[in-house]
Length: 385
Image (cartoon, rainbow, N blue to C red; front, top):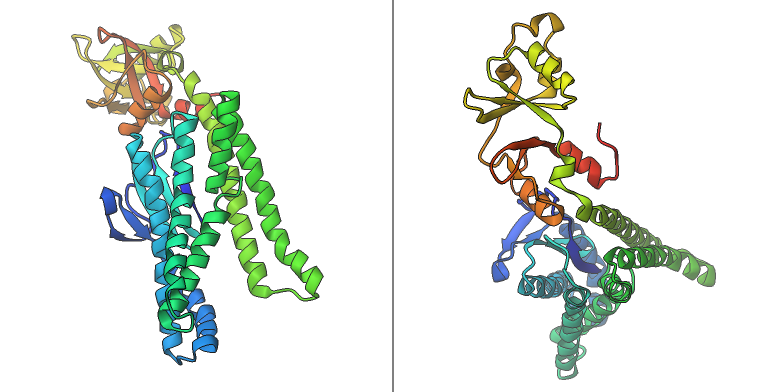
């Protein structure tokens, strides 16, 4: 099973709801279980139930025991994820939620760790707790009857947690070991992006290795294990996609420091609300402005002309349609200080998502119009339209 922390870009607008059933709020962190967990629980119950029946001959109770083990296994994953989340919150990072899914779990952390040292500890504490659970379960197993129900559960529990802890230490994203590698490269180079590139490619190599394992085993044994092959393809695909997404996110984050409200704002002209649309567009063209701000008679901004709504008005009617009819009203969250840049700019926009914002200086004078689409294009490395 995979597990790890998902550190998303600040501008991310993920749903605040959960992708499944919320089962609790330990330490104030919402925990959700997706419906895919039922599939894993069913597979574990069927496969492990047969093993228990062969070892202990408990009849139908063997499958009930297997289902209990599925619950204990995901409880272990939850402990792993809580370790990530609690340490992240201790470092002042927001944690949106924990999601348990078909391949394990993920902690959704709202911001990137500010230093490689904090990145290291957030990543390392998850596998550490898995190994501690494995050690505890192993110690109890040594005191239990290996052919009894408790002994069987403890055996599977310590082995599963050992595998989760060791597997997640492998050096490739999206595994925790990939974040450890990222932290190390970041520390050496001083560039988080360089660390992400190294860890993402490590994850891709690991993904190919996971997919190749059943093929190598089939070549050695002369037969292909269907279950093992399917599971390897699913796990390898998940790892490849996770590494690729981490690389994409890192490329976006690399551009964040260069985002400046002053530079992204489109030049604007101000016109009073009863100005005909045709006249407002003529003034904008003469001033080489891309936006039109609607004001009252005292010059107070009221709204911003919506380009699509303005274009929808036939040219012959624009002499008779006031700009106020094709404008979006400004709200209390529409004003953006001209000096905002980087992370602060993105956090201000993500806190109150709007199609456009009015960029103003310290005295409230209009400096231009900032469109959300222009910010997204800049983050994607695209030229604005």
